[in-house]
Image (cartoon, rainbow, N blue to C red; front, side, top):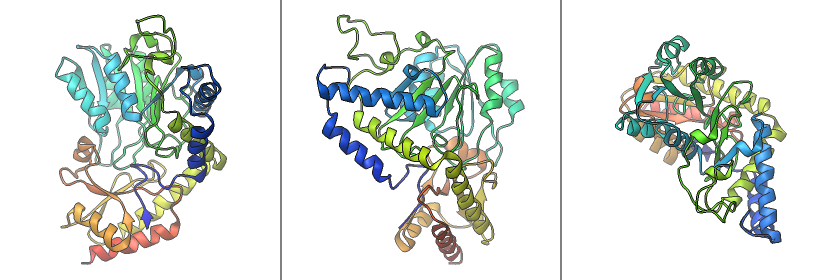
Amino acid sequence: MIYLDNAATSWPKPREVLKAMNDVLERAGGNPGRSGHLLSIEAARVMYRTREYIADFFSSGDPLRVVFTNNATHAINLVIRGLLKPGDRVVTSSMEHNAVMRPLRDLEKKGLDLHVVPCTSDGCLDFEDVSRTVNANTRLVVINHASNVVGTMLPIAEIAPVAHRVGAFILVDAAQTAGAVPIDVQAMKIDLLAFTGHKSLMGPPGIGGLIIGGNVDASLIEPLIRGGTGSQSELEEHPEHLPDKFESGTPNIVGIAGLYAGMQWVMERGIDAVRSHEKELTRALIAGLKDIPGVKVYGTLDPEKSMAIVSFTIEGRRVSELGLRLDEEFGILSRVGLHCAPAAHKSIGSFPEGTVRLAPGLFTTMHDIKRTIQAIESLAHL
């Protein structure tokens, strides 16, 4: 089997991640912050240790501004739902995932002033278009660090100052980049960073986070849910201090332990080494597919400007059929369709059918890539 669906979730997980999750259940299975016994205290240590590690990993500063969420979608909704009011102007791009577009479209019906900056057919965003769209009424700029459809990376470090110039915040969806490329929250001037643990950070499903930059007044963001936090329990009013304000209910301590182990595993190998490996695989995959008659490859076709994501179609063939045959006949696992990003597919010209998406990962080999190219070539010639 050749697993090329790492843009959906990384697989397999490192053994260290599985061990860490099992270990925390055995030795730290209490409810952190809720009791004073050994198991609860140890669980709280696991949580704070991971918070500190995340803050260091992303160079974000105060670990108490790291909020654990279920995933990047949860983190994005926390900001969009909690910060924006009717009449606020929001600027985003046409390459966004539905984790961004659906809550924004819903709020648009309730009076949000939404502006979607169109991207080019290779998924690129013109910085000048963003600059022209952001004005004094803009409250938030929401942008993905890299497209989940074609992998194209967007110029976050250039866009952030445009938002700040008018007093707006920038929320970055780093679902496809966290763990695969270096992210320095402070140097890149990112106000709010949403990430997930189950992709390039090599953690399990069900854990992610939101990093709230030091310049963001957290009192401006309302929590999605309110409830027990283990703090200020004498009050029926919800606490305002971080991170408790946004972490109601029993936390996913097993997922947090797995995330910590996954991030350590990535750091031991080095993000630069991870990036180099994935660029090499992506370059070979693009080169091989481009030479096959009838195959169209989408995106910049430049691994220096994109993540390890390659979307393609074959003229006259349905992507659903291609994905099924890759799986059943060649043991190659991909993802087909619109990838929860219809606006992105409209931008690149693949709507409504979508594409076949191949996403190599850390465990993918060059032999896997060669076999995949051969398989697609045989399908193209049928």
